[in-house]
Amino acid sequence: MRDQRLWTWHVAAGLVVLVTLALHMAIMHLDALLGLFNPAGGHPIDWANVAARSRQGFFLVSYVVLLGAALFHGLYGLRTILHELGPGPALRRGVDVTLLAGGGVLFVFGAWAAWAAFALARTV
Image (cartoon, rainbow, N blue to C red; front, side, top):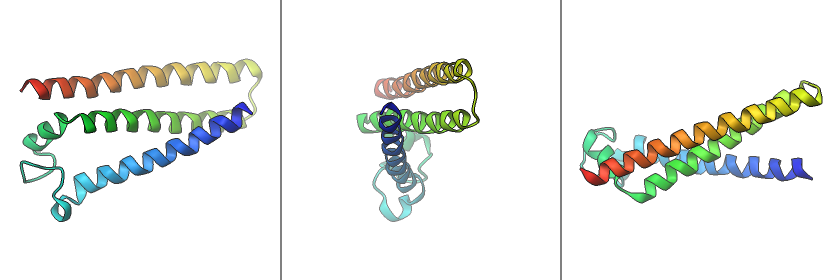
């Protein structure tokens, strides 16, 4: 039952990644057609546009959601592959703990970086 619930979360995280990456593609690569998220005009990675997007809470939340979904989706997929290799119970537990700890560290660091960019952009 636990594996079924984790697999459901894995699929849901994949859908979240799909939606947030589609949003990224629209912002960064279809701006000439849409012109929605680059208020300063010009290229999407011009500093004025990056700073303007960094001030918006929507982008902070979307970056953290993308980070969490991508980490869970990727690390759970890796866990599944490693478990299919047939390791013993102790090694399975070691893989689980390592991936959980590594994912937690990466999530905290990435969320902190997104928050720092948001806070810095709000002060400028």
